[in-house]
Length: 141
Image: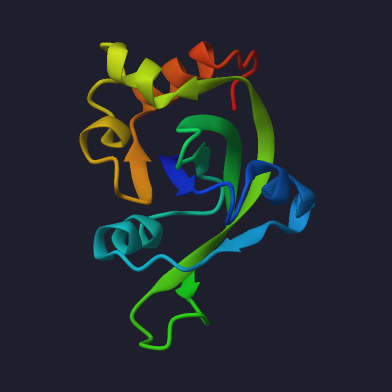
């Protein structure tokens, strides 16, 4: 299993909106960055990701699962970009903020810190476990 981070401005698409979609999930569409596209192309069903609120909040608030692998994005008129489908799995009991990640030696090398503008990014297994621990996740997700 691989791990990822999905960024969204809560005014556009929030964690509560994602949770309301339930088991059917929601297409992660509208990505128009080549590196983010390559990251989504590498995703497999069952991969997990953090749901990150960008903008003013700047915090990891939930965990999602990839339930639909890469396919064309119907919102892209150029036909160059695609999407994956994700569903909400769990809240992070204690959101982990960007400032906490920057101050944490185990998280300071996360793509979230080093290349924060990338909307879909990889997360290492070590980073995943550490964020889950900091966020109060009790079970292995």
